[in-house]
Length: 73
Image 1 (spheres, rainbow, N blue to C red):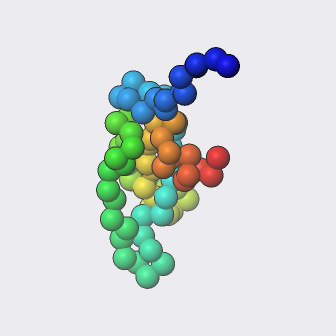
Image 2 (image 1 turned 90 degrees about the vertical axis):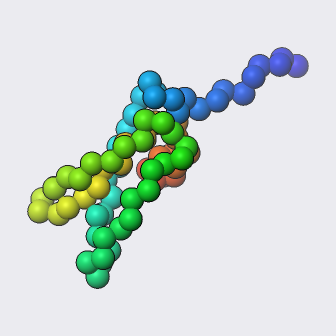
């Protein structure tokens, strides 16, 4: 039996990042609140317009548990 340590997710500032686009507004027009991700340090968000729709693009470390949940890996 080997004692290899479990790999920890890389969620530090220098971690590789990925993005996911989320709607900026609920169906009734109410804006969503945006809170920072507590699971990764490189998290940031930007507002983008795509095909006339306003979206929030969230950037996370690719190992971030929330990011993996959002992209359903």
